[in-house]
Structures are given as structure tokens and as C-alpha cells.
Image (cartoon, rainbow, N blue to C red; front, side):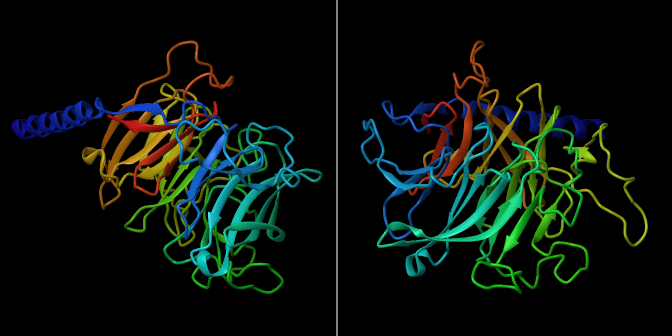
Length: 395
């Protein structure tokens, strides 16, 4: 038995060593040396074209230049007259997603902040001949935001054609309003909406197979709950939904999202009891027992302070990383590449980039601070940084 345990440990160590060696061939270089986009938060491709768009938190969507020596980027959509920011750390234009049938209907969706009252807005716009019509805005949803932080706003369409939208717990700290476990609140959740229909007086439809459809006292938009401030939603090619959730003071986490799942905040931070929880006692037995779902991966604040969710890599430039989930930490600049098997168990966690050098302040924007990891049309990745630079992986 001891020999078998030794061999298992030895093989695991060898496997980890090999993946670390492979990772040493990965570097992160600035892709556009003379271009800066203030606080970029997302990129995507305009369907039916070769244009890549980059979202700036301040309220502008730019066209990413083809020329890597470009010094400026043309504006595709300017929403600065709508996006109203009190504090630009977490408020602003936070999400962009194109309808799966955009080439036919021209529809796309944005998530942005407004004030007085403080709220997040999910809106639909229509583009005509590839150009957005600012007069076409249709507000689908407004969510009251009690504080200026934890706005979330990440969006993606699933393989089912529905729109998945993440929301933060409303902000401040320690979940003071206990929104994440409150199933009558849309805060601290992932929502699933049918943007092609309407339910009652709602500007969107409620999918019939949402987990809480028809249940009294529960918002039927909710797909899962117990989130703090999700930052990074991604469907991989197998249809699994990944979600990174920013932690409070000790743990950052990555989750595989299940229908109706409870991911624990603020009973827990990561897989650990949250000592400042003000929620009622958790019912763990009986027919109404609550099951908290563990993250597939977590890391402590010894390695960072704010996770930036990523994507599962399916590119060709780095074969050893194929199938790995590429993510980073906004505060430390670390980048990692864990692998998770079909059973949802982590099998590796390769370091791609080590911590920023001393003196690079997270809160001054003076270093590599990933705000988003996105997929390019060629299958490779862009890594956006809070200092306005656009990075790519290089050998």
C-alpha cells in the first residue's frame, strides 16, 4: 500500500513538474505598444464581420485596430451619455453580448450603471448594417444597487440561446443586506433570461425550465445563487458554465455552475465558513436541506486579492494548455491554468505568470492587472489589463 501511495504521489509530482516546465515557455507581451484603452473590461467579435470590439468601463465600445502599431481605436458605440458613474472602480459599462441571431436581427445587449437612484441596467440595442442605433435602446431590466461596488454585469448567451447575466451582492462588505441567499432578490445571482419573449409585464421571458419558475416568493429569473461578485462567465465547448467569484478577505474561487445551485456566500467564502455571516442558521437536514456547492478551485489572498475569470483554452499555439481554464488575479498579476476533468475535479493548476514585481500597486494601475481574458477569432487569447494595455500569450 505504501509503495502504491508513493508511486501515486511521485507520478502526480512528475505531472505537475512537466506542466510547470511547459508553462515556462509562456510569456505575456503587450500586443499594441502604442494603444491604451482606459479600463478595458471585455472584447468580442462583431458577428458577421472581422471586427473585434473592446469595451471600456467608462462607457465606450471601440473597434480594435488591425494595425498593431495603431495609437488610437475608432469608436463603435458611445454610451457615455447613459453610463453614469459615481465611483469608477466597479461601476460603469460592464458587459456586452451579441444575440445568437445577431446577423439576422441586429440585436445586442449591454449592462451599465446609472445613478439617482443607483442601479444597474440591462438594455437591448439594434445594429443596422453593422452600426449600432443608439435610438433603439429597449431597457429589459433595472436592478437597484444599494452601494457602489459589487455590480458584476458579466453576460453570455448559452448554447440554449438564453442570456445568462451575473449580479453582485450589492456591495459594501460582508453581505450587509444578506442578498445572496435571499431568493426574492436578484443580487448575488446568475440570472437566465429569454430575450426573445415576454412573460407578463416583464420585458423578457422566463424560461419554463428555470429552477424556480412558478415557485411563490422566489424570483423566477434566478439560475443559481450564493454569489458575491462574479467576474467572468464562460461556456466551454462541452457546455459547462464557468464562473469566477471575487472573494471577501481570504479566498477567491472558481465554480462550475449547476441549475439551482447555491454557491455559499455569505455562509461561506470559497469552501470555508465565513465567520461574519449574518444569515440564519443553515438547514442541512430534512426535505428542505440546503446543499452548498464547493468551488472546483480556490486560492488564498497569499496569492492575490481579486480573481479575474477566464476561458477554457482551445487554441493551437500552446498545445499543452488545451482544455485548461486560463484565469488571473487583478491584484497580484498571477496567471494560472488549472485543468478540471469531466467529473468536475481539478487535476492540475499550472502557473503561467508569477506575481508582479514589488512596487507595482494594484490600486494605482501601475502593473499587469488582468481585467478580462477573452477569446480572439483565431482561438488565441487577449488579456486586458486595468492599466489600459492589451496583452497576448507568447512563446
